[in-house]
Image 1: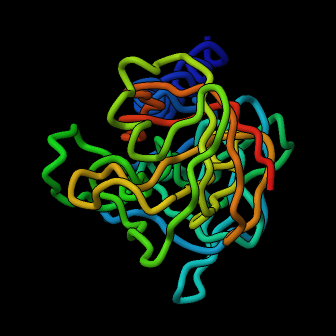
Image 2: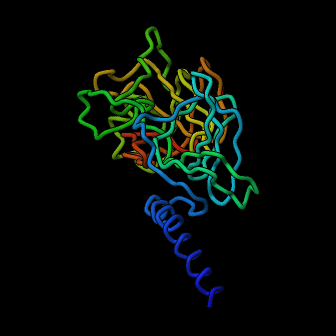
Image 3: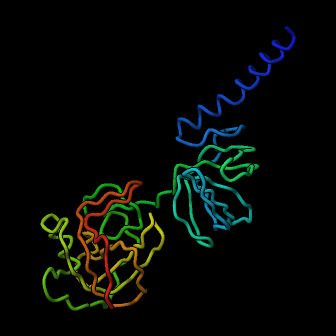
Length: 255
């Protein structure tokens, strides 16, 4: 009888502590192992330099060092990140003494975030939906139109200019295209792709038709004049605010 009462008391204690944490993480789609879940007090993104990272159970565990020197662990759905890069993540639930069975370690404190923080948005006259500031050719572009760029249009079948990629995106959707331009920005390892921005001097900065994004497994160098071949896609939405009026996918670069 006494043994049964002790067992019942232990079960009630476990239910009062563990169940709220499990339910909270279930609502957020986060792992339900651990205790001490609580909402992050700060609504600001968690930003810093990546010191180390590891993947387990569909999640990426990322160790960040903030500008003030403090270090914090953040967990997000598995994604490709690079040690040494600066990243920013949405605030989320904080777990104390979280045990990852896959990694066979316990984190004193870890923040479960729903993903990377979105860049600030800016208003343009392009009439597009909300888009991140990393996206030339879409609202909120932070890649300025470079002056003195004048790249000769590619020749042969399917050759177009950057401006024509946007202007004729409906007609060219899902079709092979060839564009020549200067590489003005390179972002690597985002969504397991490299994001290469090219400009050829055509297009309008006001309308956001001057800078064309090309995604590829291949890499290209800043400042190079390249001929890009790939498949043009119209209104491509990658989620998380990453939406483009026109984009070249599966791109190949020829210098």
